[in-house]
Length: 61
Image (cartoon, rainbow, N blue to C red; front, side, top):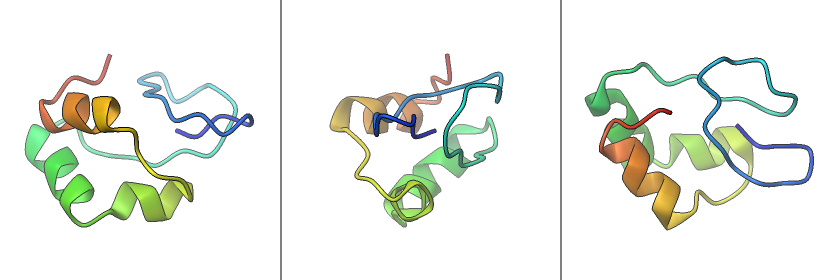
């Protein structure tokens, strides 16, 4: 999700304010979304490398 201040974070609850993008919990879904840059398009900002690595590894907390 992208917070109102423009930061990108993982929100497993889906309740934080801001712009969200849904990704299934399977690591393959997140890896594919990262590869296709779907998250960057949906959120309108670049995904930081550290967060990209976490999502590719399947870490959603």
